[in-house]
Length: 129
Image (cartoon, rainbow, N blue to C red; front, side):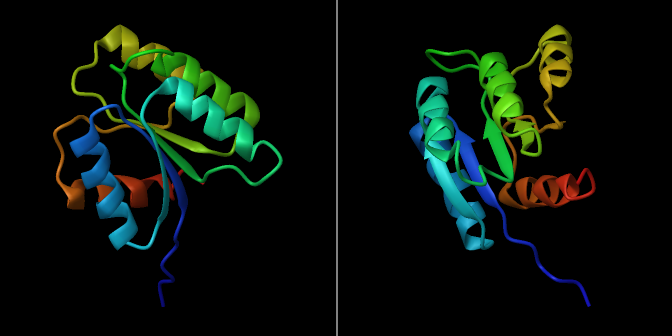
């Protein structure tokens, strides 16, 4: 019997409609979601979690104002090395992808994607654990 796993997920996405759809998709699947509108807010949320368990998964957009996605990934991995990081870019160069993977990104899911594709990608991260 397969047991469904529900994770604590942080979403870092500056586009309100995209953030809302991702949040609803994950919440409908039973995941607990904490949204952040940019890298600065994500770092604030992470600092609040510092003495807690953190997040199981962080979904991070690449092109957003403020602190760069690369810096957010590095901070997540330094504070919570077990947190899985999925990059969700609209566009990503090979060099950016390599840098993000080197910083600790576990997966990349290019936008646009369907809710079912996101849920499959989240499920695939379980294989990393």
